[in-house]
Image (cartoon, rainbow, N blue to C red; front, side, top):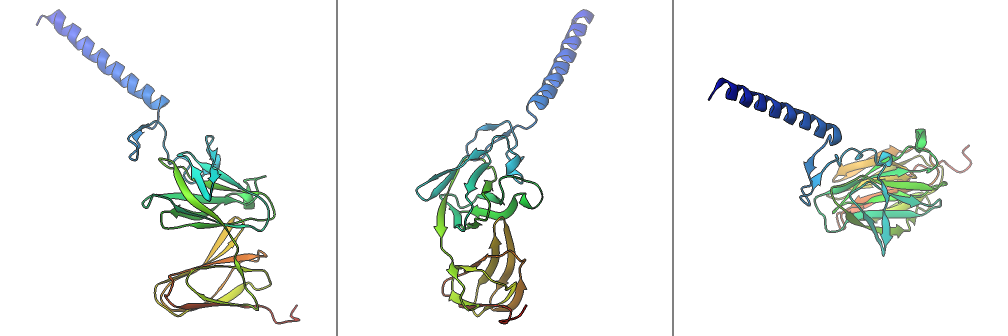
Length: 252
């Protein structure tokens, strides 16, 4: 190879390397994220996790569809408007998807996402779990985090059992409703397995009890007016009892 040929070859190599580097930089600028959707094998040019914890900021968020007792979402962030009132809804579990989950956030006032009205994380729905949505005095909105593919979940309107005379008893799971002055209660469970109790309000959840096997504890919750208690326990695992600490009659 002559000296001239060597110079030409070296120049071509340098030019190719330089051009490749520029192409890589431009590709990174234009498409800062490139990946493969493991569920479909499709090429991804955006990070699906960008809005996982802030779906309400996703410019491509889409309203989910409600059809025949199902809520149907796409791969993008989704939202479901919740009219003002006293309705209680249960969303989940996911249909036909045991492994993946969808994060759920509740914005209790659609007029603002600042301060107390900012969407609060309620939990996630999966093939084994669901979340409770409590309507409030203002129109709210439920936000669903994006996923790698579309999803479907059960959606049912529930009528919680009203707690009378400050005491509720039962076995297995239940939804209870209480409106009164009590801000704490005694929770007892005489059985085996998980015993879980949450206090639910519009756009907020207070996790009161997370216990395995028998328990006798007292827990409190913030003053929010009506409170919905969600009790989770395996059917036949044993009886539970909730005794509200209501002020005595005539107590100011």
